Image 1: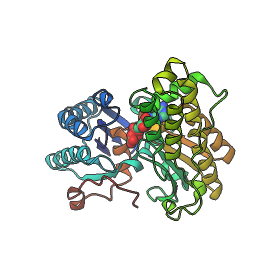
Image 2: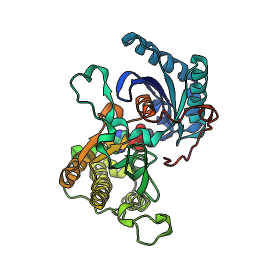
Image 3: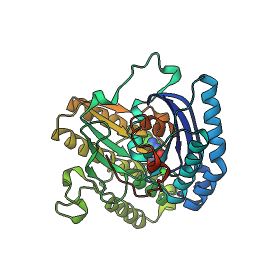
Image 4: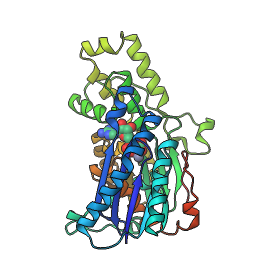
Length: 360
Ligand code: KG4
Ligand code: ZN
């Protein structure tokens, strides 16, 4: 079964065709990052207009690439309907509805964060013969970690398609924390990749003691979750701001060559904290796998420490190859194969859900 997936929740206009939830037959990602760089972050109005301009071309190219490698038909259209930026989501959802209607095939609405957790199961058509097929059902129960610009959430997956949130950030997401720090330090947008590279070059020597984001037991924001499984990054951001102010500002620190030291310290106040919460979550239940998805899973230090955490816990670590870590249409199309029950008139009546949480 071939599904075309469409993704426009933030700053990537993307479409891809995936066979049977696994084999990526075409994958087109148009990134708007250069458009948002001058503003230091994603501007929703600019994002939605760029989606409008690019969506047809991206979809057409994805279909053409698919036709170049397959004589089969496309059986369904999948689309992200949330969470994300409302005006951006609307562009993809409307395009998907039109495409499904014109092709006379079903539409499937997909949760963007769930889709990130499907990325470890994707394989390029060119690698299909050499990479063993992973069936998500074989790895349940699993612990999921969705870590991106908008989410830092730990999920219990008793079965594939069933989710319960067991922990999360009480304020900023990890990616957001990286992006905000990079902006404050004058490193530009998006901050995550820059923080990653600079920290790697600097190493771990003599780090500054930034706060480690442990929420206090009993705060209402925990909403009944275990404080040991939650994080808070807003205090870290404030600590960084205070440090920069107390030391004469970002420009002065840059002139003194201090930025790498600060950046590496900041990253080290985030990554081990995420690893620590993950290790704690893995001790709560007899999981078979740790499934990690989202843009921040590209972080090289996070990849290293999560590998150690998974090994110590004796669970299989499932993480996407880098090209599928950021937003893309393949993850939407891939997950949709396991969500084929979500079609019919209800799908065509879907509205965008900017704050969509996890549903079964
Ligand atoms: O999943 P994604 O592409 O979009 C959302 O759904 O949010 O994630 C984007 C986030 C941004 O905050 C970006 O700075 C972060 O992922 N990111 C990274 C790295 N590459 C991207 N964070 C840390 N290290 C990286 N190498
Ligand atoms: Zn994403």
